[in-house]
Length: 156
Ligand SMILES: CC(C)(COP(=O)(O)OP(=O)(O)OC[C@H]1O[C@@H](n2cnc3c(N)ncnc32)[C@H](O)[C@@H]1OP(=O)(O)O)[C@@H](O)C(=O)NCCC(=O)NCCS
Image (cartoon, rainbow, N blue to C red):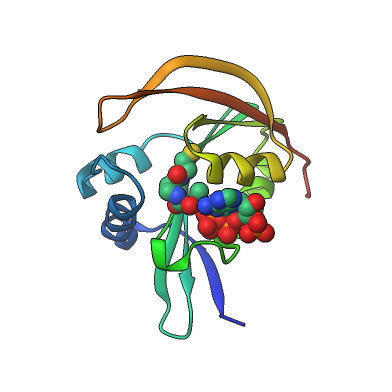
């Protein structure tokens, strides 16, 4: 089985996240923007490193404000998809959110992203809202965003 390590994002990981982001999403997200986002109060990230070489394989960015948490972004590099890494990142992030006081975690997902919807529904997220034509895709089409929520349990 491939070795996997999940660790909090430090300053050295801004470039890694920007690189992984570019592999996961159409719109680029340059390193300074990652740095700026992660400097905001309550915002943090996790990266997952795969194999003995510790290849950066994915990231998750989150924010906790008062009793609400939000998954801001999650992406796994195409070479490492469908090996459970997104599930592992989510499993690592949720207790962290709960233990910093969040009672619920929210996220948005495009209705044209069945893989991500499967991931979230499989983890017990439920739909609590829909934003019509929220995402404009590169081909000019629009997709609705579903707003999903999952209650969190404190573990400490
Ligand atoms: C969505 C994404 C994060 C999933 O990452 P992943 O590491 O491949 O997901 P996992 O291997 O942990 O999969 C967990 C479950 O999610 C579901 N799933 C993940 N990818 C799927 C796909 N392409 N098609 C269908 N179901 C999928 C499955 O139920 C899967 O469980 P299974 O493999 O036992 O069937 C990844 O495809 C990605 O980075 N996509 C581009 C960025 C993106 O869309 N981010 C989410 C924005 S809301």
